[in-house]
Length: 312
Ligand SMILES: NC(=O)c1ccc[n+]([C@@H]2O[C@H](COP(=O)([O-])OP(=O)(O)OC[C@H]3O[C@@H](n4cnc5c(N)ncnc54)[C@H](OP(=O)(O)O)[C@@H]3O)[C@@H](O)[C@H]2O)c1
Image (cartoon, rainbow, N blue to C red; front, side):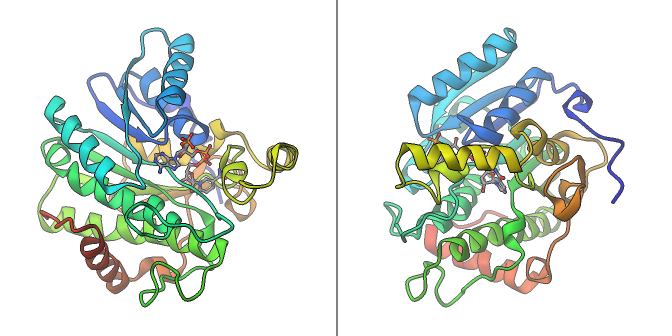
């Protein structure tokens, strides 16, 4: 597919005056997205679960962009208590929110693990954390004309399904099955959020992107988590050799987060073979990601699980 004339970070418009939050901004795609949004003038909250890593990320961005407007805020998206606390504090300090990037995620954790709320770790982190954060930040999103909520999805959504009778994968857990479910959930969440924005006449859009295969810490912190430093180093090397850079991988999300002409429910990914590498183009969604019924069903289940009722 033709790429968008090789849209790159240099094409990000001036974001001066805009307020952004990037979750999981300490490494990989989140760090790149926070850097680029700040480099183009946005005031960016680095939302991270690890204070030391977050301060390091802030210093790294400032060393490259001394005028960057950044703040650090702690949030563990795998904890509803932490998400609530972050959202409450953030809303007390900020009236508007132009760009929310729900990026924080974990991938293919070998053994089934639970969050402190009792959710399967990948569903709890990658979907329910993003769901809860977005709903709790809706007061600011609603007050900001043209606000955008960005999901970071994955090609891994394609072979997946939502196990509505076993969302927490108690009956059958596979590392990739649970990951794929969470990434399919990101797309269904985007779909239903966009439908609700339109129905409630909220001047905001829900959009999604995926990075293809990008060199980040995702493999070392997920499938290789308990394997020891050497195996993790090998995994990083293998991932690095086969993949594109995090800078390139972040482009589809930066495109939907900032470019002109992006519409609600747009989904972008890399233009190359199997959407693994390249410049942003409209990405392929499998039919399971296009189901309005499943999108509504997932929304209702997510409200029940998080005990957060949607105001729209
Ligand atoms: N890399 C790829 O090829 C690829 C492909 C498709 C989709 N994605 C998606 O891209 C997103 C970013 O991943 P990445 O590739 O950039 O990997 P990464 O380098 O491992 O970054 C993941 C980020 O998420 C943070 N995080 C994880 N759990 C968290 C939690 N409970 N609360 C707050 N932050 C948390 C991590 O924080 P710590 O530093 O504290 O661990 C880190 O900042 C994920 O949603 C992933 O599913 C990546």
